Length: 57
Image (cartoon, rainbow, N blue to C red; front, side, top):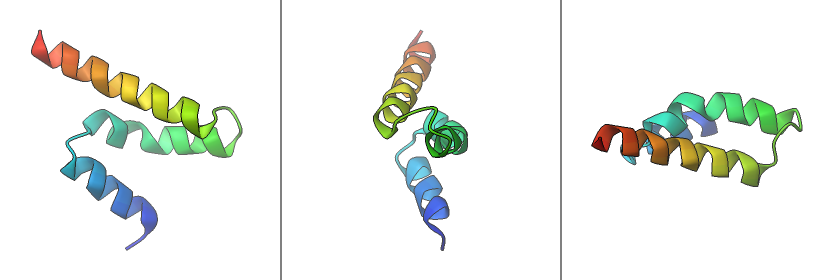
């Protein structure tokens, strides 16, 4: 199984739907030098937190 498939499966197991939904976009941004890995992780975590806050309201 490829690394991306393992990652996608793990994100699903961890119930991180927004990260799973956006990981390819952020991988592309990191590859293109638009985002650093830390920026990408921070933004994806913030997206996930907002999603969970929205579910709670």
